[in-house]
Image (cartoon, rainbow, N blue to C red):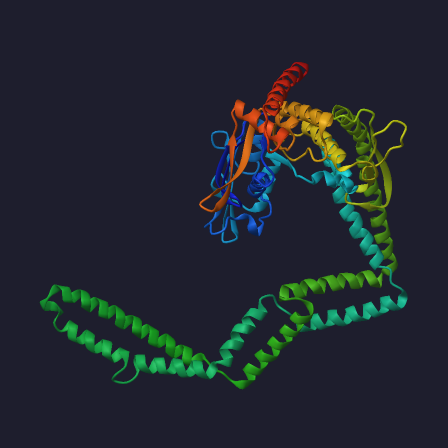
Length: 564
């Protein structure tokens, strides 16, 4: 359950804190007061996109924090599998935005946005203001069905996806293998040339790195010899050399070290330095005598390096990649040399993969059709509760003429809202308000089988009023008995059903517009209902109507509670 929302420096909100409760949480306010900012802030914390205009002007940063109460053991196990562990049964998701960059944290630990989204999917389901329009996209209907049948179809879909990948790979390979005799001969000739070219180079792994080092050494050979010889001269040759100077210093210290004990330490240090310098001079002399930079060696190294780099440009960025390419070309050459046998094996592999993908597609389709009967019946029941009195609702299945990773089902919801009328697709029948109620019915059905505790509805009441609004309010109340529901609404019938009612207000302070949100007391709830009913002028009659509406809602909630 979502316990707390903390927002700072986002859009019109300077700073706001909201404590949510179990049951039905209602948020209301004047148009433009900032209701959408609340949902937008929650979306931000859950990994949603960050609009540029979201941060308050001149604010150093923006911040949103969500605190969830985690008491369900299965949920704790799911989090544990992600190496996330609630502290005192609480989990905090936060997002701080500074200079356009976001830092997302879970319980103070910085995490990637992908992990936040994965965790969020366990806690909360947000139904956006226009999400019901997604019902007009037919492919979404199958997704809804699969969500309903998740526990039954998940393993089959995983096997279906895997088998489809093998099928697609075999299909592509078979199609690309369809060569005529002349094409095959051309490819054989070209492959033989490439194989010979690589093999004749006698490449050795790591050779290129050694060649680069040798080339660099030889390229700067003259400079190396000059610098090394000069260093040797300064360290070992002539009266002013380092060796002679150190020897002279050692002789002077040694002549007096017996008279003062600390000088013995200096003497020992100079002895060690003298020994190290002599070793250095011997090794440097050996390096000079062993080093040669002849033009012939340089030309050989340069030629070999050019050859290796030429092959890299054609066959791979490294010698390892070139040798891998060589093996692939040899394998392809073997296939083409015995093409009939190769083609026969491809056809067998394709037939086997096609049979396998069909098996799992058939299983998935069977599960879906069985689940569709249950789902549409459950949705129909919810639609009746939402004032679709003579509704008919079903799912029609067609078969694609090809396989996909999701099988071959092409499914669509059909509806008839009037007796005697044939069922038609939603886009041909449903209005905006009807789509909104259909989505609510679907969400209600899915919520009964889903472990997600918190459901957020952003103006689910679009396009409805009167008796229908009352039915929707009752449905929201029932949904709030098994889930935490947070709902933004403009309808008093729904607001009256609130277990907790929050008012979002806009005001001007110091020539700056800010939005605030606060929980309403019982009397304030009636006043807000009166505003929603009466608009600008709130008369005694309007206040009385609001009080009666709140009282009626309380009685309805009591009756619904007894029935449930």
